[in-house]
Image (cartoon, rainbow, N blue to C red; front, side, top):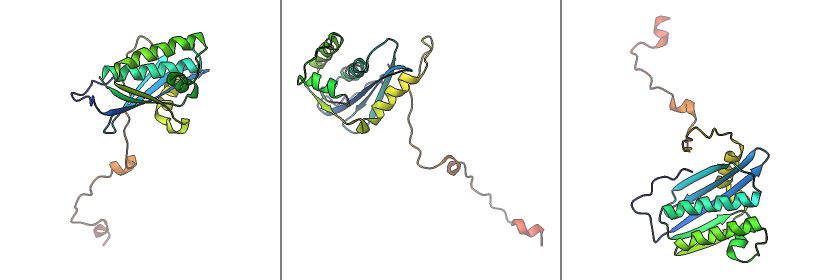
Length: 182
């Protein structure tokens, strides 16, 4: 997992947001999480799960990865958003957790959140959880060599197409192209 070095001012008293998502498909299993700082900076995390799991287990794994990243940053106030109704309502205590595998996951999340002054769990529709979903899907589909170190993904925003950046300033020529014809 890649965690960017914590800033000196970790905004201990400010609200951070965490979006998480898990993906389990024929290609594999992956998780994604995004921490959003009070000033709107995004800190994405993603991991490939190299073990068999259900989609609900992947959702919990993603929540745990993001929660651990938040505790490493010494964040104290956190809003957690996920698009798994089951996981969110189980963590809120509104739905019973019956699956023995999920009971252990829920217990771990509840232990981790003891580090925070305030944590809330909120359901987020899938179409509003796009970045975490994309990270989870990417991790589930990519083949990773365990012996190689994977560098973090850098996401940039280009405001113009590549050809626009390669236009060179025209040289000032005292002789226009048509002068040789005359």
